[in-house]
Length: 286
Length: 324
Ligand SMILES: Nc1ncnc2c1ncn2[C@@H]1O[C@H](COP(=O)(O)OP(=O)(O)OP(=O)(O)O)[C@@H](O)[C@H]1O
Ligand code: SF4
Ligand SMILES: [Mg+2]
Image 1: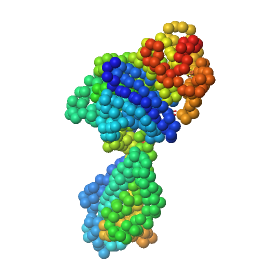
Image 2 (image 1 turned 90 degrees about the horizontal axis):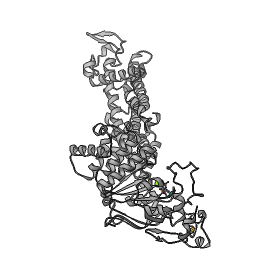
Image 3 (image 1 turned 120 degrees about the vertical axis):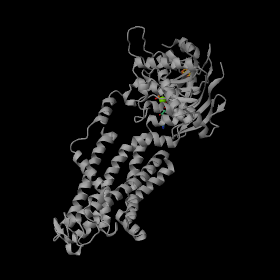
Image 4 (image 1 turned 180 degrees about the horizontal axis):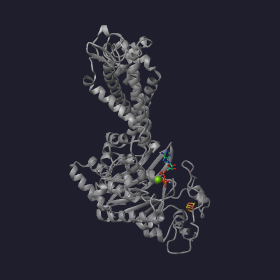
């Protein structure tokens, strides 16, 4: 029991390793870029200039500088990349929150009540996990039509079982800990048991899942928009930019490269931060 | 004897249809410490869990009555039992460190019980928790209030758990091997604390243990269990003065002597407690009993009054004194 003290103290005081710091900085920069897009983007992301189509980075036209070049409609790639961060982060954030809350609650309930509740919830989890996400996405879009909100709905519907599985497994082990049994003995109701005793002790594992999922969600949104199932033109989204840029890689490489680079940096930094969070929060790796 | 705080009557618990507790009866009076002793697996914890109405999923309450004062706990709905748990009946566990939530401050955990059972404001709850920490002998209670379990030693954690259990002033405290995980000095301190609190608050204590040393130190009365039954039960002085069941006698002979007598190898009772569902017919102790004869193998002895006070279940209780 005394052996636990230095470990736990070390945990709370351990500095963030230098390998993670630059990526934390990149992530922060991307988030700020999304929030303050109107102040950062030099030009209107949707303004077309048919005289300045497919211009290379650094092109100047009518007093405006296209620092990262222009696309096939003469829109500023830099401004569109900056605005595209909004879509990526918004979709990822909203779908992680929705699926995370929904999945965690169901997983906890399944593990806590066992019996038929457990059977039903975990069977649904298995079923949803076995349906290909892209199929569900196509069906949903066919029914609801393509839009930003429907992308979030699709992602939330397909991703919650990941959290349910983790919450279920973790709750099973925590619910058998003496402190949970003791609290139940002392007359605590289920809400108190789950909220005060179970959730804080499984939150670490769930946060780790959420960070890894966040990176995946950014990619999924890009993928759906790339397929035309996501955000609709003219709204800037990294996935949609990649999709059109693909047609011009030989002649105007900058259209796909810069949003692709931003996407790469965002997912990389989130995954690295997620790995680090796993080391910090997962009790098994303490 | 004053009115009993707890009455257990003819309790029967089964697991998968096989009995694990088989007709156990006892009473605990206000301010009394009843010690339930017996080897591992004889059904002590099952008996305790059934009092709280919280048997493990596999186990079934097959028969019997559990009365808290004159409330029949079996007749209450679960919501009614939940109100009593932590308020009128409290429990402390064997694993003091694991029994505290690692991510919750000590003070909050002690207050939790108040929050569940009493409607008092946070300031008052905090004062009560700090007073309780002081009462269980934790130094610098204000500081400890804000600390996490990992910052406390095992003995401190056990004290904190006792504080949790006693904050609502329960009539009955069930302590299931409360000191097994602690070293000897701390163990003595915790036992001392429980005795003092019993004197101050009049809480009745059901003390489950397999340590006869703890019994000698703490108990007012003793109930010895073997294979799901109480086989001897009497005031502690009488039990130590003379036994009328061979198992009790052998159990007592296993106490290590602290009086400086040369350290011999700790005697143990030969054989093991039979597994559930594998109890021998007749007296369940007969395969291990030095006095066993054909009568013992055929029929099970009932609990009958001992010569002085209490009861014992042995056909040859008059010959037990001659063993060893
Ligand atoms: N959850 C369970 N499922 C099945 N059998 C169980 C379960 N818990 C206990 N048992 C069995 O019930 C019997 C009585 O167990 P109990 O825990 O009451 O013993 P005990 O006297 O408290 O022993 P110990 O001194 O080891 O704590 C044992 O034979 C045990 O194997
Ligand atoms: S009844 Fe017989 S077998 Fe049982 S304890 Fe007494 S002497 Fe031993
Ligand atoms: Mg036990």
